[in-house]
Length: 267
Image 1: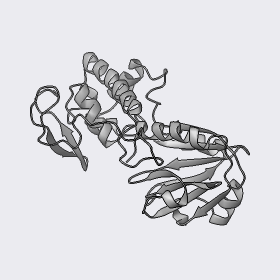
Image 2 (image 1 turned 90 degrees about the vertical axis):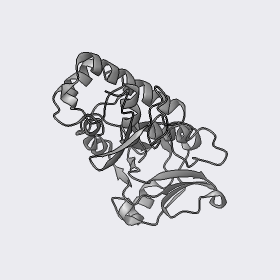
Image 3 (image 1 turned 180 degrees about the vertical axis):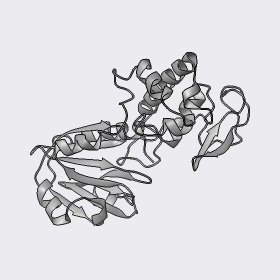
């Protein structure tokens, strides 16, 4: 599932590709991916310029010039491609927005969605999710307060979007490795030093993920050399040597998620 760095990479890439451009047409090939009838959505977005693109956690918000918004959540397996019809991937496309001779293809939206909403409805969607982790208002004190209230294990708490918004299965492993914390310890039992390490690692790993274009293997457009350059430290690297101490990386299932960690230097 795309996480915060992947969605920020998409946001930056799409801002230069479609920012200020008008949607000339929309095609809906899976009505479950949208929230209103296909004909109504197509009519509502036609000839509307994309005024801005913003991100909140794992969501993208396309603000249209008439004030309405398209809210995107890619969920598991979702991704996007921008280009001409002849350049599109050989995959099932659920939704596409046309911008003249180029289109933004939404792929793998089996669980994801693109909803047309008012700005107020978009904000209502965000009421129950946690703080924006790269915002200046997300301080160590905020993290301490949120962690000390939790009884669950650290991996599960980190990926709980109501606690901290934007971290998923992959980056939680990366963050915990960088902070030298075991994923299966109790979140509420961390001392101040451990919490400080966790805070710095959240900021470091997510920023590094953004700088390196996230981990998505699919390019956003033809010739895209930015998307997907992030290399995982531990996630998906079972039995490979830990980059810090060379101990073989171990895999363990935690809350139905494959979790990767170093059994020696994460404690």
